[in-house]
Length: 242
Ligand code: GLP
Image (cartoon, rainbow, N blue to C red; front, side):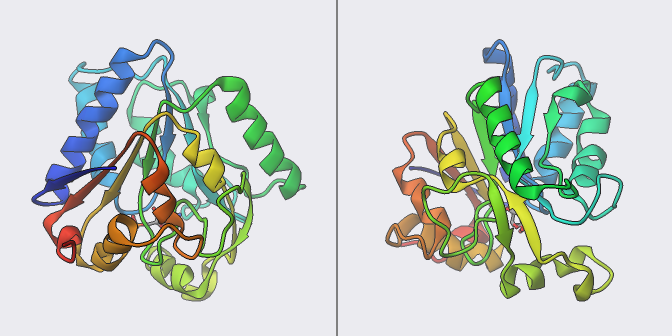
């Protein structure tokens, strides 16, 4: 596990942006794993800028997002489909047909999970997976207690996660209680992973991720076992590390 300490959110976003661009340029048909949440927004702004400046093209890139809320359709402003379109896809030269997120309004959610897994497998192996970090140690929507051998599945969001994500919704009661999430084993199959964390409220989780024991009670701890993972943290997020 490589740790990269940077001064602030901006530097974290730029560092990650450069890695993504390098990956996109060095692989013929790159497959990126993408995340939502506040953390990667700066990274996406960096990629948009680089694309506008013709420093990089996303024409050959395929993407798979980590998760989607169950019950929100793609046009709902709180859906992750909408987030990705608005914050990235609509502003770069990527082919929309190559961008993938689980369908949170599928008639058969279990089948949708199987189909999503199958589509990843058919497309190839994710070259670079971007991850954020939940305050409770979740990665994607894999909450504490999720099996390390999980594949894409339906998950119940815990109270802490609903609380943390309520800021995006008008009312806390509007936050969906379930999601489709890529599984932990699915994420671990990526060739390379970059996890981003910024701010004091992630410091405790970063400490457990880097220095704690590897346990299903803290899903992100599994990353200690990944052969090619980089944790990019700003000073505030790194403040509790030894
Ligand atoms: C959300 C997402 C995760 C994200 C995490 C942290 O619930 N499902 O993929 O990494 O929580 O979010 P943020 O970056 O807003 O702190």
